[in-house]
Every structure is written in C-alpha cells, then in structure tokens.
Amino acid sequence: MNTDTLLELFQKGYRVTLGAASSAVEAVQDPQRAADEFSAVGTDFQQLADKLEVRGALTEKEARDFVEGVASQLPEPFRSVSTSFGQASNSPKTVTTVATPVVDASLQAEVESLTAELVAMRKEIDELKQKDS
Image (cartoon, one colour):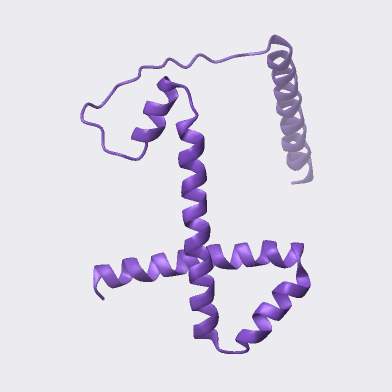
C-alpha cells in the first residue's frame, strides 16, 4: 500500500470522525433537522461518508482558525512559543530539573505502623500454619 494512500485514508477517517462528532452535537441541538438531513442520505454509506468528510473538513478549518485567533491574542512571549509549537527547532534547549521527595511525617508514621501490623499478622499466620501441620 502506498504511503500517500495510507495518509489519505487516515486523513479521511479523521475528517469523517470529526464530521460525525459535529453531526452528533448538532443532532442533540436540533434533532428534527438532523433527522431530515440524514434521511435524505438513506442507506448510501459512500454518500454519508463523503458528507461527513466535508463537514469534518469544515470543522477542522473552523478549529484551526479559532486556535490561530486565540494564539494571535496571546502576549508576545507566549505567542512565539505557540507558533513554534510542533515545528522543528534549530537549537535544542536543555532544561534541568531536580525532583525532591515530599514526605508528610504523619503519613510516614502511619505507613510504618501499618507495616509493623502486617509483619505481626504475617508472623501469626505462619505460626498458625505450623500448628496445623
């Protein structure tokens, strides 16, 4: 199978899924209109898939436009990060972090107490097993 064909198949599937989701939302908002719209299609699944793909492409474009609009309203430091997101960076940046464990003293004491109880129970179970043998 050709890579371009596979990519087109995934893209079509993505858009059909977006179109179906968009149609489902619309069906909840206006059930009668959705019923009329889909009853016109009938059982022609190819026509249904084409219709959903077109709706999905439109939804995808609207979503991209919305994200670009929101990104254009961000302050400058965030805008440069959001516009470069997903694009290859010329200079990789290294961020060094140090993880420090946070231990609550009361939780630590409770865990130690429960561990001691478990050890005692295990010992008692072993003793009972030895008596039965």
